[in-house]
Length: 217
Image (cartoon, rainbow, N blue to C red):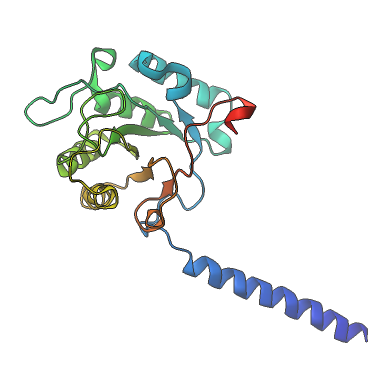
């Protein structure tokens, strides 16, 4: 009887393990090998919004290491909206005066700490804070991110271009990142869940902005 019970338990465990593996194998996800577990790190928006500066980002990278957070898996230092200028220069996004040394220099600093750098853009003609958006410049921007050493892109949903399609816009940036020659995590910030998101991004939001307040949760 004991042997039969033990066999039954083992069979259940094996069956559970097998079904779990199959479920994992069939789970839809952007198949680029990135962000297989939830990315952990820091984002500038809630604390600094458009007052974010290059100096603050470097300080956050320093703290991430000195606090021990990096050692337990917090790797991303993500700069949200307002690092860009309002207008492009010769078709390229340039950094605001708060980032006078440019994103490449900042990425080098963050990488020197053993961390990864993320930036922000938007599928529309402008970002949510009315800086230069990526609409119709997806390939240019993705190639610039790669050249600068960016590791993560948060892609927002403001200022939709007339006649554009949300899903197609996100797919354009997905493909541009894939073809950029650098591994860049793609975070879809589309304000709600879309069924196409798992095959388009590495991660995607499912609600509006959240803050460190109970009503927000």
